[in-house]
Image 1 (tube, rainbow, N blue to C red):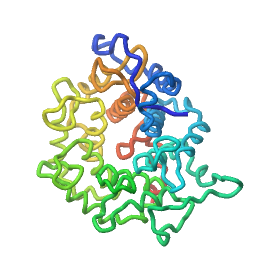
Image 2: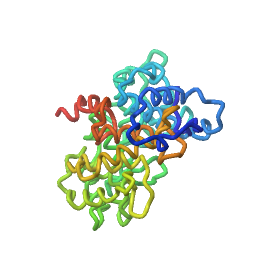
Image 3: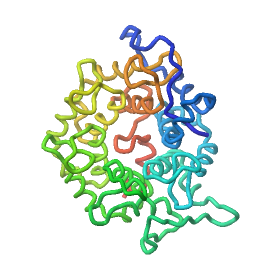
Image 4: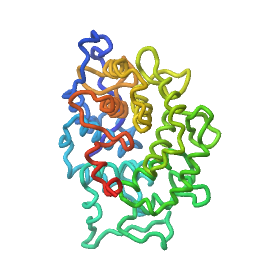
Length: 360
């Protein structure tokens, strides 16, 4: 079982061509669109996006939960696919046979938490013996619980001198990987495995004069990287180091006259920033600093109202990536009938708020 961030069916009357007063979220169409993603194996794009397969499962599953159709994807098939993506080093690849990477390992943990499958994973057995993978990324003396090898792999990717995280054994660092590590480790209640203070110091070094954050020190502010830094700081309970007013002002300026949001100045609007910008504003307590009505209209105008799915902007082909972040953005704005999304994790809030890490 797999999902891809492939194109939509297209060819139908786009939502942007419909009168504004007729725009509404076509829930049933979106559910069917996500459901059908795994059936399109005769299309080239399905195979070209194999490197996004596990991420795609997370995107589709999350969207279905927010649409209040959590059981559309069979739980047993979902678990089977996730397990098949795990490698002998304890990490997860994009699809069976792919190398482990932080981004895919995080998606695996998010999926398992969403379907209440973390205990299934820990109890999983191979050949009658509990599967204990070797962690080539992590020192044996730190790996105190060998059944949590996925947590060990994540923790082992931290640079103990700088506090930052690599995506894999080849060493590329990015605040995306730092946030991903905090996301997964907090879900697993294993934050004690990493040096949180050094990671927070690294995030501080990525701050810019405009209040935003870049992917590394000296890089320009970007809405996506701001989300990763603000999200990581929220998990670490260190939002006190952020200039809330200045950052919220920069984020609110991302809204364009048509209601959509962009990632940085002088760029086009894109539905995915309905998540990256809104979630950061929500964590800062400044969600009301954007025009919610205009943004809702923009997101709805990007739907394929006949076949389901949401595109980056009106008239473009839909994909599951923009579908989940469009729906998540609508959830943050309190759109009727949607389940509440957690702005820190982009997961159902009912799932994240039941985690031991947030109950401690």
